[in-house]
Amino acid sequence: MSTSSEEHPENHPSRPAAPPSPDTLRPTLDRIAAALEKGNFLTEKQAQGGGQGKQEGGDGGGGDKDKNEGGDKDKKPGKFKRFITSALGIILILVVVALLVIAGLAIYHYEKTHASTDDAYTTGHTHMVAPRVGGLVLERWVDDNQAVKAGDLLVKIDPKDSAVALQRAQATLEQRPAQVLQPPGQLAQADAAILQAQAQVAQARAQVDQAGANYQVAGVNYGRNSALSTKDARAVSQSDVDTTKSSLDATRAAFDAAKANAAAAEANVTAARATRESRAGDLEAAKAAVDVARSNVDNAKLQLSYCWVLSPVDGRVSRRTVETGQQLSAGQALMSITPNDVWVLANYKETQLEHIRVGQAVKIPVDMFPGHPFTGRVDSIQNGSGATYSLLPPDNATGNFTKIVQRVPVKITFDHDDSPGSIKGFEDLVVPGLSCEPVVDLASRSDRGDHVSKNQPAPPKSKNQQ
Image 1 (cartoon, helix red, strand yellow):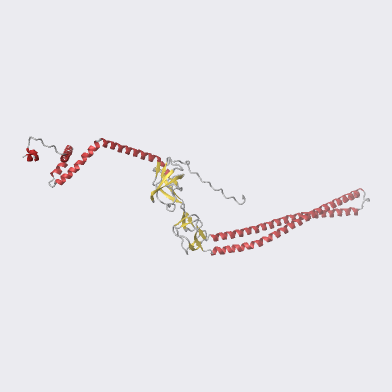
Image 2: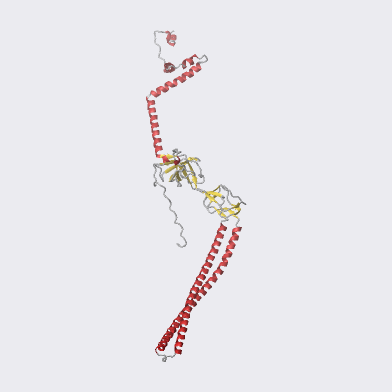
């Protein structure tokens, strides 16, 4: 009996029962907490006027599985509400609000210190290649998108016509030196003729002086005899008076003839000098003809060299239209050479240009390379909006005016140094026409407020100035 009573102490009401162990209490407490949680949730739903719980309870097909799932869902709102109202929840809410405010201020500051646009694209120089002489295409040395260097052969034109023209010019040049030899001899003869004419002038003048002296003597003799004959007819005979009169007339005629000869000699000097100037002109004309013939030879050589069409710059071939056997004319477009030197042309709104300056740093995300944003600098700002230089600029004076925010092109160059955002290594990939969204850092250093022009070469001097 003692053993039985020890094994079953509940049969003895006078002995107190042993306290339950923690392992047996934990499931009970969990069930009580779940029941209380479910009761609180149902009470809140009834207070809010929700009839959803009744409909779910009145469902004839709802089993224990549905009730258990509903009980699991009912636990979450209560826990979330208690978490929000707890100190940790309030702290987390304040932290989130602070982060949102900080993010908003950061975005506002970024928008104030950066100017971006999606109306931008890469561009570059395009060199149109055209022949300077016409002819038949014998050879084509390049293909589409081929890289070329400055001076590389692109197209060869048939040089036969130009070679014949060169031979003709060289033959004409060989004839010109013989024509230059004749004018110097004629010029020497003209110089001798001038000297002879000048000697004749001197001789004629001497004859004039002699004839003048004779004329004066004859005049004196005639005057003396005529005076004596008038005073006394017997002093001088009439025959002597007539003789002196005849001598006076003869010397006068001789004096007039000497003066005429002197004038003729002087005219001969003038004619000789004119002849010399003519011979000198012939010599200069002959020399000029030689120069013309030599320049014709140079021009023929130049025209012959144009039969080999060369690349003007380093770049790649694009828009090729020439083929072997094609008949070309001078100035006909054959292809384009596009260098690797590209830049960005960004059309910023006029309201964004207030703080954009030359030299400011620019971040250049290109759509073709989303994982490699390039960097660059503001190079220049166009002196006028895009509408100003359009084919048909708007005329606001017509009265049909609508205010539109204008856009001004801004040239942005890529960095070519060893920085991470440099275009170095991408020169062959960044081609003209790519879309990009440049962002100008308005707080970065700028060089000056306008574009600094490059040093221009001095104009070539003329031949006279040289």
